[in-house]
Image 1: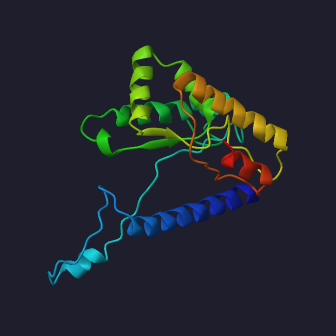
Image 2: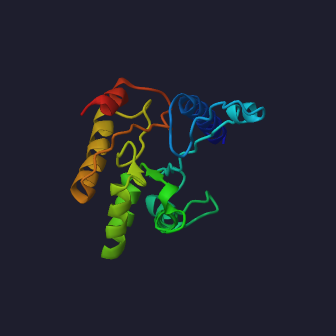
Image 3: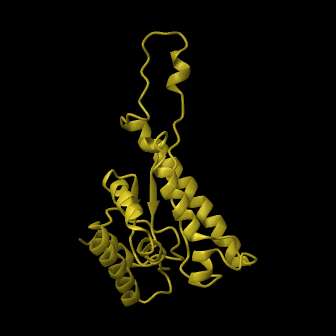
Length: 201
């Protein structure tokens, strides 16, 4: 229980850091969905200049076997332990990103290729084609791209390399995608191996 509480506290702290960093970054660059507002002499414009734009990155982190088995997580079984239904998350994301009224400004980032591959390989050809279009438009993207999001502190470096390679090979073979963003929110410590994985080409 103490580990679960500590993990929750750390993940919330990291989310806050990410949000604050994103807000700071947004204030220094121009974005069509979040334009910088300049004072044009209007006496009330000073209120607009103080507007805080918060950017939220829709994503998931689904453990590939922690409290439940891979299939229990994927199919939403044994929810007395933890509420999780990975296939349903992916189904809903695909459905929402295809919504013609709101899809143009929605994005989603996925990390764990074990679950994604299980879901993707079962998709009908029409949905695979739709997903590929979303990937091409950068509305559905991948970060990290490993088979799972491994721990850093207790994991042997060969396991880290192997599982990252397996996930990247799947993405390249099936979708022609190579992740460009590292995403490690569940590290339980830091290792030189992970830094090397995220910076190597």
